Amino acid sequence: MRSAILVIKCRAAVAWEVGKPLSIEEVEVAPPRYHEVRVKIIATGICGTDDHVLAGSFPKVEYPVIPGHEGAGIVESVGPGVTCVKPGDKVIPLCLPQCGECSSCLKSNTNCCLKTHICEPQNLMPDKTSRFTCKGKQVHHFLWISTFSEYTVMPDSTVVKIDSAAPLDKVCLFGCGFSTGYGAALNTAQVTPGSTCAVFGLGGVGLSVVMGCKAAGASRIIGIDINRDKFEKAKELGATECLNPQDYKKPIQEVLLEMTGHGVDYAFEVVGCLETLTAALASCHMGCGICVMVGVPPLGAQLSFDPMLLFTGRTMKGSFIGGWKMKDSIPQLVSSYMEGKFKPDILITHILPFSDIGKGFDLLHAGKSIRTVLMF
Ligand code: PAD
Ligand code: ZN
Ligand code: ZN
Image 1 (cartoon, rainbow, N blue to C red):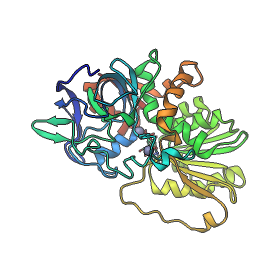
Image 2 (cartoon, rainbow, N blue to C red; image 1 turned 180 degrees about the horizontal axis):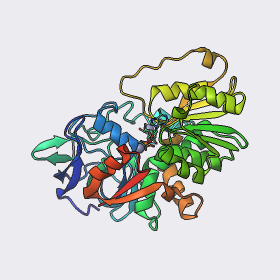
Image 3 (cartoon, helix red, strand yellow; image 1 turned 135 degrees about the vertical axis):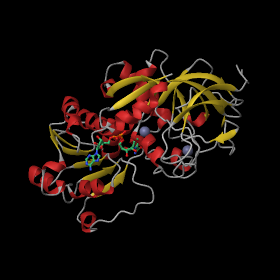
Image 4 (cartoon, rainbow, N blue to C red; image 1 turned 45 degrees about the vertical axis):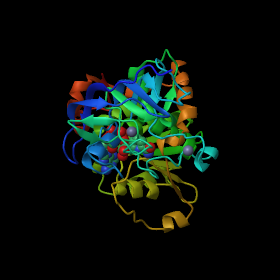
């Protein structure tokens, strides 16, 4: 049964154009339509990808847009045809849909649902209209979930019910950062016990890769970041050594080859930068090293590297939200969290009221936060 059919007025952070800071506005949020769900967001993290949106370096975004994709909330109302959730359910919005019908969803070895924004822009709902308006203007959705709005509407393929006891201010990180990094190590790389790993970029996602490598039994985990303030937490989470490339005259891949003898078994790029991506590939062991690309590359960038790196047996692969089929996996990850199997809470360095979202981005830019969680 539909519990509400009214337009809701609430606060949201709108990016009006590329390069401008977010501005907090009153927006109107239309009711959910066929196979759509309206969610009251309780908590949302700030991810590096949201920053790419503000900078205009994320593909296929249209402005004005409400970013945010690492949220947790409670279903407020559902449109006709929705059976997977009901009003009052605690949910996590999914930045990667799982439609359950496309050829990717039917395969067991990929989570890249063909409805993902890489194939189909998610700036409007599937019926090509928006549920958001502000000052009489249509505002776009981001990844169909726009968690920087107190109320937001999403297709039912991009929302999943979680344990009713889950603390939303913590498990919001399962919507992106933690799941992405942890899954990149476990699912995409399939890190083996006793192996050596290098993680380029020790933000919220990179530190989650470190946690994944440790959980998989890696014996050596080398964290690499140009901000040495990130090293303490990296070591706490399992990094055995940390390096700042700026401390060396040689390229960092040469330093890694010398440190390890023949290169690392697994290298993860978690910055979103072509130089670190080629350095990660070049630091892999000849014949068997696996380089996993997690960082979102700059818009329109073209990669160039010596193809002999691949010819001689290294593998380069991308990881999208940690390879998890999100509808199937996120509730299980939340349950494992509730059983104490891992503690992504440690990534949360700041908790701020939603009205301080600008401060949250300032902390990210200054390299002073790992994850800021905003509370509505
Ligand atoms: P973040 O900004 O918190 O962390 C990035 C880290 O990289 C910071 O600690 C920087 O100091 C560090 N850094 C910057 N330049 C360098 C360099 N040259 N060498 C080494 N370290 C450097 O971002 P985040 O952890 O939230 O996200 C990291 C990337 O992952 C970002 O590109 C984001 O868009 C991407 C991402 N990908 C997915 C996915 O599904 N693949 C999901 C979520 C985020
Ligand atoms: Zn699908
Ligand atoms: Zn993210």
